[in-house]
Length: 511
Image (cartoon, rainbow, N blue to C red):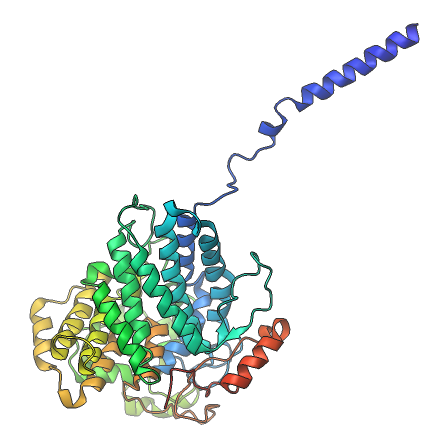
């Protein structure tokens, strides 16, 4: 009997303790700080931010290829910095656009689309994500050509881990469709998403953004499908493109969240990159008021340690661009004829204006939009004067300098415009050369429009070790990682598009 009572008391106490431990168990083990769900609008913000890279090293693709191909920024150094300076493949930097966009940006955009596509209350977020996805895919396909598109980013949703590569022609057709549908579907009937990082939920501005991307995408097809190009240019204009610099798509930075190109050039790469001679020479020859905003020269510097504030000058008269075709050794043979003391004495990008740490980055601007409209007017695709669009486009970019804290006086703007009217006999060259200047630091767009238009009329990089058989790099090769993880789809794309080299042209880059 005593044994039984002892057993019963022990069992009862144990059950009571177990019951007591269970009380509040769910609340106790729930992390009230770590979120299990992120609002799609916030994930979209993250995708937009990541479009401009995650760190300074991500910008090396831009610094070693895009800027150098269009001969705006160049380095004489090789090894990890080789690229357009030598017209060679650098397997460390050619994959950077691919890696960031597929691993980060597109994964986030696909997540937003999956979460919002069936929710009418989030239709604006859904359509804004479609617009941004179209823009991101433009950059990817313009850089590499045929890429995974229709099955891209579906590893987490449908377990497609070896997506097929789609022809660029099909990609552009769908990009234009997406921009058309998404821009039209944006509605002011819904409550604005005020956390929107670009426009604070201003749907009218998102519409202008979508139609401006449509204009850009349409103009890409001028050489391969002018009928489709014209049709979508007209749709974009009818829908309503950017109307002022206040509509520009801008990623803003702060003293703590830096412009990563600025961060990299202000630190690790400070003495390694220089303004290229073709860019500086063009700006100097035309008395361009943007030159002192773009450039700084540490006059007489004989080493990196002498690139100090006391030597810094943005006076246009003293700017000297680094000539193309030299490495850090051979450049010494042309120092005297260029009037510099050393390679460290050439002009560089101004770190106090366009590349200060909190300098903004632009995705599409009013100036670029007007210059594309000027070309469309020359082609007879839109109403209005090409000369008027051209002048307004230049003015817009000159006024855009205020975003860097550099206000160009009205008298200087007027003097420049008066001295550079549109000449109908060379209109396409003038328009697209100004587009080159207006796209400074937007390496993806400068590279794409240079290939599309053929302007500015740059000379081939004369570097003797060039791996390029033609005049210029036409695309970047696919990452080596694709050979390992998706070789079947990759080989199909190569057989369709052409060799995986710097010379192979993407579909719209027709001779």
